[in-house]
Structures are given as structure tokens and as C-alpha cells.
Image (cartoon, rainbow, N blue to C red):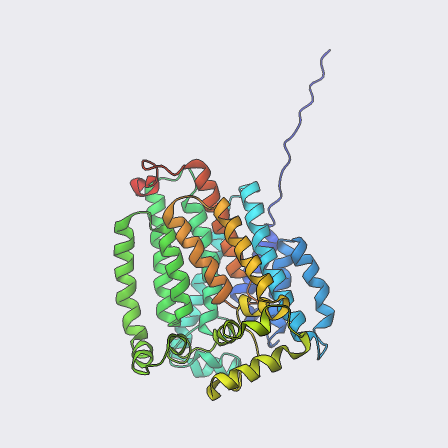
Length: 399
């Protein structure tokens, strides 16, 4: 008598519940975590993402939480927590998605609903911003008819937008989809991008939308069509800021900071122009004081700046520029080994990678989660479509 033993293959459990919770927190922190103020909601959101996609770096970063109340080392600990938590989460997302190949239909639907609700709220805020400011004073950056949903400012809506677009792209690159389905997905992504740019009037949102325009743009006609539509929409919205920046004169650093009404890259510029002070890990006790003194020396207009904003500045002020450069280069090398050899996908990956380092907030895991999804999606696509002259435009031929 033969006994048949059926061996079930190992099943990788996709953390849909924890991922759904993290998505809701990322889209609606001002509502779900009301009335907590910065940096408590940001710490909670990042902790939830770390729990959803636990990595070694992310789990170790949780050990820094008890140091936050310390007046001497708390800020440096917060910077290091942000860097370790966001980067570790992004790597874990890429590894799990590539290994598990999950069906993300429900998560995509949830992200679509969250984007729709956020845009409806943004439109409401654009019409009646005063009522919103009375209930949520932290939304002080929402002036001039700009809306950001349940985020503290419009530019922060770029982070959940990146996750939403990465989910659409992951489904877009899957096998077995009809041409009509791919057209619907590409159109859906373009419409949400245009709506978000129009309602937020944020340059950060424009940058994220442009990154994914390149990812979807396997066909030249798609790039030209939606690129032209994007220009027609963006120029009227940003013309005043562009004109003020160009008429103001000055150097390139002026153009990307004061010229466009932004301060967020000032700490990055201060670090890069004073490399000697940041080559090795600086004194963690004087992180804010050093940035403030350098800002005053550079321009009296930035005398109030004492905090870091981007992942680069947070990383450089904790582990030094040398270690940051090594980490940055290692990410490029590892990414290029995974990303599809298709030129438009690689360019989109590089653009999003740079945005995560220098544009998006240091405490936002959303950009790195989106990068992890983009890495996994393009990696699986690259395994199916080798880089040859005949296959380079496979997707384009299907559209």
C-alpha cells in the first residue's frame, strides 16, 4: 500500500492588514491622529510602516525611541530613526514583493479610494480654507486656495501619491493584462496626477508625477501627450513662482530655495558647501546649533532654520557624509542590479531614488515604500523582458 504525502509549497503571507493600516495613516494622519502634533504623528506612521515590513535596520531603529525626550541627543536620535526606518522599510518591501509576487488588487482599490477622498477634501479646502484652518491650525501652509487633504500641507500629499502610482505601475507591468486594461490603468494614473497637481499646486507633487510619467511612458506618444497636458496645466499654476524666481536673479541655489519659495533643501546645501564639518559623524549634541549657525552665515533670511528635512541631511548629520555617500552609492548599485534594463524604467527609478533622498521628508516611509514597489515591479518585468532591440518596446507595442 502506497501512502501519498502531499507537500504544500511554502506560502508567504502578505501583510495586507498592516499595510492597509499604514496606508490609512499615511493618507489621513491629521484625522486619525488628531490632535497630536509634530513629530508624534510622524513617529507613529513610521513605526507602523516598520511593523508592517520589519527589517533589521527598522527594528534596530525602534531602540532609539527612548532617546527622543533627551534634550542633548534626542534630535540626532530622531534623525537616525528616520533614516534607518525608511530605508529599511523600502528594502523590505522590495524583497517581499519580488519573492511573494502578491496580488495587490485590494490594496490598489484602497489606495484609489484614499486618493479620491484626499482630492475631494483638497478641493473643499481650496474653496473654504479658513474653516479648515480653524479646526486644524497645523495646516498653515494651505493658504492661497491650496488643498492637501488630511495632511498638514499640500506638498505632503506627494508621498501617498507615490505609493498609489507604484501600485498602479505594479499592476500595469503584470503579465496577462489586456491592452484595454493597461490603457485604463495608465489613464487613471495620469488623471490622478493632474488632479493632485492642480489642487495642491506643489512642486514636490510635480516631481513625483514626472517620475512615474517616465515609468509609464514606454511609448513616445504617451510621453508627448501627457507631457503636453501636464505643461498646459502646470504653467498657469506655477507661473507666478517661476517668474519671481527668474526675475530675482542670483545663483542656482537661490533659484531652488528662495526663488521658488522653499527652504527644504537649504540644510542639504549647507552640508554640501561645508563638507569638512560633515565628512565624519559630527557632534550629535550640536546638530541644530551647527545648522543654524551655517544658515545665518549663508543668508540672514534663513536665520530661523535649525532642522534637517531630507533623508540626505538627516543621514549626513548623524553618520557623516562619507558613510552617507557609501550608502547612497550602494543603493544605486543594488537598484541597478534589480531594475529592468528598459531605459525608461531605469530613468524613472533613478528619479524617484533622488527624490527620496533630497525632496521628500526624512520621516516619510511612503517614498521608500514606493521605490521598493517600483524596484520589485521593474525587476519582475526585466526577468520577463530581456533588453534587446526587439523587446525594448514590448509594452509600447501592446498599447
